[in-house]
Image (cartoon, rainbow, N blue to C red; front, top):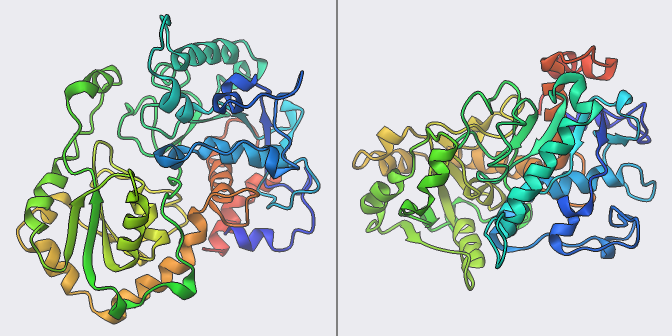
Length: 417
């Protein structure tokens, strides 16, 4: 869809943009200041003209939930002629011209780095920022206009926005999944599922090992046992209904001694990420198993490794499901079937080379939809998220939508990814 409607665009201006976005000029403490960035006097944003002036997002597992960082950079660069990017979204300075309102709060980073109390603190920085954000939004004319329904808030880490999510639940959330949200706060009707940012390197299409050169049939490396009771308070606070995760333990005992299976505990410590990337790139099938939440970054690591994902997560919602047919490159197995002795291996061993090759070829085609980068590129994850926002804006009927949004349904019927 994205490449089809953008291919005839010769410039990127307000009239041609697919989605017009108003972004609040929040103080840097809500976004790049969380990385230690300090601008000059009265400078709210880094100079996106110069990539060396843009603070890098912290690495490790922090990176997998960095979605708000890439979306914010994309909006900032949309008004910068020197940055070449798609025209999916453009920032407008007048909120009355906007289709949606974007809230640039780096909520995942705030949780990861600032949720623990420091010496002499009575309230964590993460809680303090959420409280300040709620107070700010509730006083804005833009929020009052539709009760926040046209606002976009990224809360990709499952524990991000934990204190504010209920009060801001009318907004459109960009999430990893719905595992830790009650349905009245987050649901597929109004919210968007965005891909994790993969942490292993992307295998170039020409370097992708074929069927015969992938000696491992099934690959899984990661946390096997559920987290301890220390996190139960968070579960109770948000009314958690998702209870997945135990299946990893059952599969471990079923598969760990099979000769062509790699099923092992792993972390990102040391050379863990490189080892996982090499393992996936040498495997025919990669398991994506529900853990403490329905989704994990492992699915997107498998996709960029061209390892056919086997999804064992009954409650999972996948990014861009309304325009991407995952059955063309993924295998779905019910959890109750996966733990039957012999079921999973018999299923996967029954998939012959020609069938696997079709999925392998499709994986190499769809990789681009799950890549985050700056500047953004046509049909990458940033571009796809903005298009998903546009589809939600069309369906929500908050206001009379502009013609470029109204035409989306018709375009979608004529074109497909």
